[in-house]
Length: 176
Image (cartoon, rainbow, N blue to C red; front, top):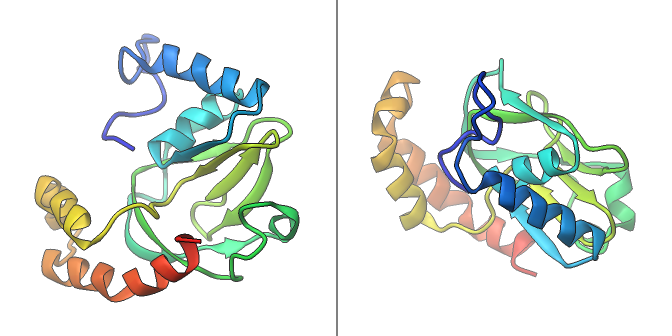
């Protein structure tokens, strides 16, 4: 994850100087079937590395606990087969994977962000959401992004409390 945009600037400058090398590494991981889990910005970079597309979302930012819906093809996936139909996840992004790479398998979707999780090749997964954080980490994001939180009309304390409330469910689903 990270605050950078996965897509480049209008002049072609990458979102971060190391992104081109990282995209090459992701392509190599897919090609050589190296098990890879790409989270949020990482999923966006995995999509771009595979010739997908990422852009600023017209739906606006997605922040806080949400549900995603498991897609039918997830039933045959080694990581997603046991995931329930609508698991809790934590979101914090303003960009979206607008086009999956050719051959990618869509594993989870949501109403405003249809490409929430995918597999590229047999061993590389991208998840737009966060399954790796705890309340303290999310609270740090809220503190660092307080201007955006307030601009969106979100109550920072209620947001952190809502994350804390769903963490047991997030851990139950995603820890295995």
